[in-house]
Image 1 (cartoon, rainbow, N blue to C red):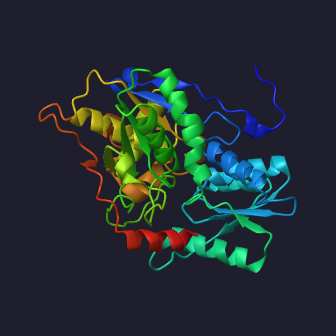
Image 2 (cartoon, rainbow, N blue to C red):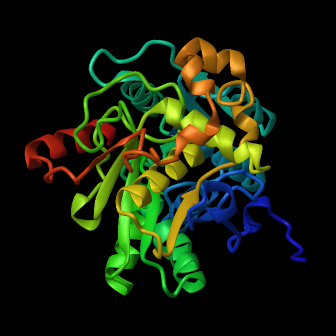
Image 3 (spheres, rainbow, N blue to C red):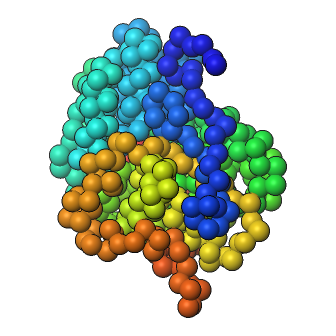
Length: 357
């Protein structure tokens, strides 16, 4: 057993779950939630803070600030507590109450924006608040996960090599898309080192990342209301869009077999199974990345009343419907599959990049 002095130094990096017995198709799930932050966001949080320390961007009097839907906020709260920094996390109403409580228990200040930006939604409102804080006091240091190369660099450095080492015969990797840090880090690594591996992005319906129409999203983690500046679609082989009721059903199906995982994981698993069913990939070696565990979702995804109120009785139907193919038609119920959209217009991309800087 390792002996550590700092919480961010422990992270179980080599745990994979074989889901064939649960889902009826070979899919390996890389579990990223077994660390003191409880999610994959420990990696970029650590990388961004340590890079800032090395280049002198932050010092003893600095106040770290970040916009987060939850998991990154927890990871930064933990690291700030360990290293002695003050930290302000800017959230919106989609943040799980339990996640907010964890951040505050770790000593973070949590600022809640309650009204969405008229154009860019809650993300825009959060970023506006971050910019106001930074303008008010030079001690505020915005790590800016949306443009910080440490976000994708953490997964290029750690996550992708961990998968590659464990699965030398890997055919396809499924990665959820939020800020696209995990997606871009893994896609860059495999494009450079194992270009035969297909990288499939999984996004939430209502996200605009891949050109979809914006819509309300209730489950935090995946999806964006503005195009992620770090996204390079030329590195991605395919995209799967998942509706939130299918996320709920996938989570419940996994929990019925004892694997209580987070909402982002449910989205990725449903997307992966749908893609595998659509491609009749019986002999494919496939890995999906599980970003987080299920406890922060007890009041939402795993609360029948919440699910019924927001998605109706269909979302509480038999979990088998979440990822099972239709036995008569061979089609898959659930998300639509889309090819990556063309690379965005450079003027629009530059405008978005300036929005989050």
